[in-house]
Amino acid sequence: MLAIGLMSGTSLDGVDAALVELDGDRADSLRWRVVAFETTPYQAHERDAIHDAIRIGRPEELCRLHASLGEWFATAALRVCEGAGVDPADVDAIGSHGQTIWHQPPGQERRGYTLQLGDASTIAERTGIAVVHDFRSRDMAAGGHGAPLVAWPDRALFAAPDRVRVLLNLGGIANLSRVPRTDSDERLIAFDTGPGNALIDAAVELATHGLESFDREGARAGRGKVDRTLLEHLLTDPFFLQDPPKSTGRERFGRPLVERIVERVDPVTQEQWDALIATLTTLTAESTCRAVRQWVQPLGADEVFVSGGGAHNTVLMDMLRERLDPLPVETSAAIGVDPDAKEALAFAVLAWAFLNDVPANVPSVTGSEGPRVLGSYTPGRP
Image (cartoon, rainbow, N blue to C red; front, side):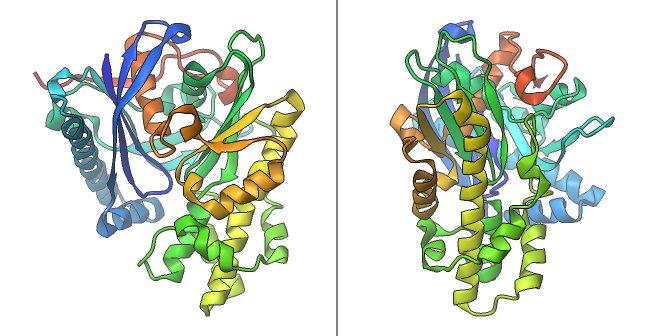
């Protein structure tokens, strides 16, 4: 089958679309190939609309954004088909993650809840392709975190017969999967580790008054001097010590946190802003590596592969390599996947799982009551 995976993550940089060829009806024999990949960047007013919905969340803005995201996602899906020379009528399904507006993990005696926008009916109407969507809700209804969703695809796609792999995604939020060897009875471990690029991106936007949206190749972090006092304060967040299963989002590690930090440290000069960006970059590296050392390395690991926007931040990658040495750290390109395409690929695979009635949550990862088929289905246009 041909499937398109659509991903708009917490970095809010754009819509990733991966056109994927999938062959097989069982996870342990699934063959796959990324046919084409495209990123459709958000324009400034589109990114602002998402920010406003997250921060203000009035019903009218949420409804308008839900429809608008459906249009933007449909455009991204059609673009990747056009780039590959594929007729949309030949695509079997779209797996759309949607744009997360709010994600509240479960707590003591309280179930979690989540909201992803991006109208599936609009995507189906504009493209003519059936859409599988709303992947998180079923796991959360069964008592789970609904995250990380990529754990099951990580195992299906990247398990190796002779080594334990760690798949680390540095999007807005960072998450990892420890994937056991192919024939191992070990359980899969996956969880959110904390901030990825979200805090860094927010600081860059504030420093440049919106002219820049990310720290290209870590240039600002490379110039800045880390504020050790602020770093140690940020590392006291209880999330970092919480045992998996665990998940988080922009609600905790997003622009509002950066705005509170800015009020406290009051950066004015470029040097002060670079120091803040260096500190937040170090926070991502340190919190991620602490998670690897505490919950992954005691079980054994042979190699780490990094995907997401953070894979392009050379300063951040150097920090990871230094802290995890001698564990090898490479980008996911080393295992044949564009770091920007990996999560979109995962949602194409999750659409495949839904259409084959395959449970694609991992209860030991999410904390749910048991295996569940994830997603809802909107048929394509006749």
